[in-house]
Length: 181
Image (cartoon, rainbow, N blue to C red; front, side, top):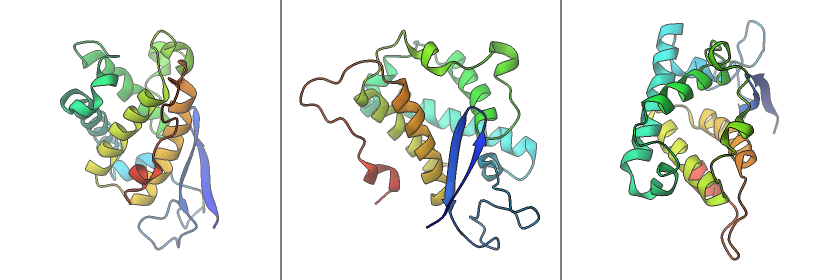
């Protein structure tokens, strides 16, 4: 199975497998056979795409804020999430292949450095990822796109870990929950 991948923003994103260019979930275009950036799945115009990124961010933070299952990661965030929402939106815009809105305001993301003040374990990573996959599914994106994005999100979230896992704790994300099986 061939996997299409491409560099977007600050990470490597893989979306989908070798699919026909006639397939609406294909991540390549017939004109240049280059992989499409994930942002194209968020809308057909740049404005719709940016609105889609904003919607994803809002779904993500709403899920974190309202679902008691994510209480652990919610406590790592400020009481008011407006600033977190805005910075995540600015970052995701470029990371997904849209305009780089983050770097002009804040410089290089330096994700690991910026997350060092917060103790992040495998459990925190997994809660973050589950919150994200729930949000992506609520967007009703093609499952192959979700799987590709979640692979990249996993790599990034795993790299953010800076706290040892407690002895005997589960150290791995249950991939069934990401794949929806």
